[in-house]
Structure formats: structure tokens, C-alpha cells
Image (cartoon, rainbow, N blue to C red; front, side, top):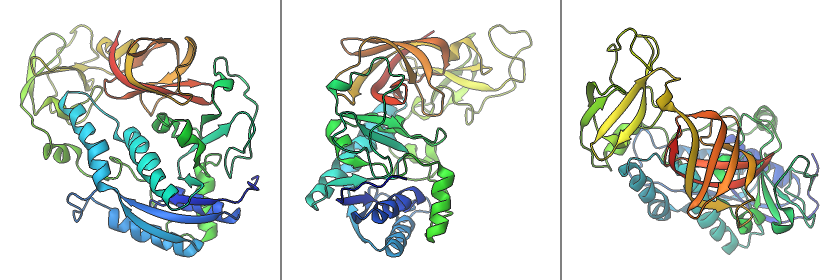
Length: 396
């Protein structure tokens, strides 16, 4: 691992997890002046069994003690509720399925947190995300664990002269988080380090045990950003109005009643509450024992449509449009062939990109499964994450 020779004051977001802990240790090892900040971003039912904020802070403080750095507890709950959670609820109420982690990164971790760190005299901030930053003109190294600039091999369209900083995928393909970071702009990328971006998760775990970090074996967090792991429908039910309505199949048969369209997402398999009504030989679906999937939501008639079989035509899409776009370079890339993700847990899909007045259109070489309005379509040129937008529509 190549060390970054320039020593800086770096403020690290310590979440209580192993990735941010190892990030802080790596920076300290390289001689940087490291300060930890624990962000508290949720206060509703803070004493419930599902909120791990207090436990996470204890873990973060224990990590700071082992590493030998100061840690500050900062409350961004008001910012989170105004900038992230309110939009999250608006999208669900409109029948779409938002990705709060993406908005949380853009509005809290790399805006409110970044601003606070700069007030503390930080030259850089750092997080435990599996991603990398590269400055293409070579004026500075990409980050403490990244060893500086690399050749741009294989990139067809990225205009390196127009942008000093690029967001790159993390080198561990199973942990890459560039999808969640695609809304970061030039100023944010210029101020950010991702110390574990070039490491596989297995190496991060190994380092944590070698160092003797108290959270070395702590499991990775899941659930809504900062809100934690809790029954999702029960949680949404506190905040969203809902009206039951019919569940129908692709032939118009009523199969049951849903509890409110906001509580379902395209491609959902569990929790629909319907089964055992498929007729043998019925068209367009799978066999009579194939599982059911949410395929469409008709807000005008308050109807939930479900289909049987993972490969049902209603779940297959060849194109999408996206709005509310954000580009790392500050402008859209040239039209042409790229790769894209329309959801986090999928391989890059070959596509043709076309800018539009409202955002962009993607046309895919292969059909994409359950493309969901409200989720993000993120564009890639090789290892470079160019940016993306919020999916507004999709079609077969």
C-alpha cells in the first residue's frame, strides 16, 4: 500500500462499523492528523429495540480509543429529517420507491458532515465507503490508500479534460458502493478520501482483527440509512396515509386486497399475501407453483398488479428515462454506449445513453428486470462512475 506523503487534518465519519474504523486507522498510520465524528441522524423512537444509534456510538468511541484519536458526537437529525426523510416519504406517497441512502450521502454525509468538518479545520473528510477518487491531471494523489493516478485505460467517452476528479468503483466488486455515491460533485470529491476503496472486505476484516479493534467481527449494517433495521411496513405505516385496494393479475382477475400502494415495490415477492390461484395453462406466466411478484401500481385506480414467474413479460424492460440528474463532471457525458445499473445489486448492463431535456434515456441491449421508478439509474464508463438520475419511467 502506497502512503500519501502529504500529511493533512482529516475528519473521519466513524459509524461504529468496521469499514470506517479501519479507514481511520489507515489514515493515522500514514501520519495524518485524524479526528473522528459520530453522526446521529435519527431521534424518533430512539429508545426502541431497532435503533442502534447508542450501541454504534459506544463502538465508535471504543474504536477511537484504540486508535488514539478524538471523537465528537454530532447531531444532524434535523437536517436528515428535512433533507432526506421528508423526500423519502413524498416519493413513497406518490407510489415510487426511493433510495434514501443515495440522498443521505449527498445531503448529510457529504454536505452537512463535510461543512461541519471544514469548520473544524479539516483539509479532507474520509468515510468507510468502498469507492475511490482519482484526480486525472495528476496534481494530487487519489487518496491515502490509492497510490495516486492511474491510466484511464478502456474509457471511451469520459472527457478527462473537463473534470479534475473522477469517482471510481471500489476494487472489491462485491462491496463497491459507487452506486450510492453517484450524486457527489467536484467539490465533494475533491474533499473526500475513501481509504478502504482499494481493499477487499476480507482484508479490512483481517486488518481490524490484527489491530485489535473491538468491532472487528461486527456484522455489516443494513436497513434504511441511519434508521436501522426494523419491520419496514410497520415503520412506514407511522408516517404514510394508506388506502386498501384490489390486487389483480395480468388477466384482470381480483386475487385479494392490498394494504396501500405505498407499501409495495416492483419486483417484490414476499409480503404480498396472495398465492395458490394460478390456473394451469394460463398465458404469460410461469407454472402453477411459480411465485408471485409485484409488477405494476395503478395510482389512479389504487390497484396493485401482480404476475406469476420471475421472467414474466411485465417484469422485463428495455428502456428507461431518468430525471433529477447529477453528473460528477458537472455536465452530462456524450451520447453513446455505456454501462448502467438500475438497482444496486446487479451487474453492469450494456446500454445506449441519450441526454434529454429533462434528464436522459437509457436503451438496454438485454432486458432489465423490474426497473422501478424512484430508484436511481447510474451510468458507468468502465470503472468510472459518471453520475445518474432518478428513474421516472420504464417500458418493455
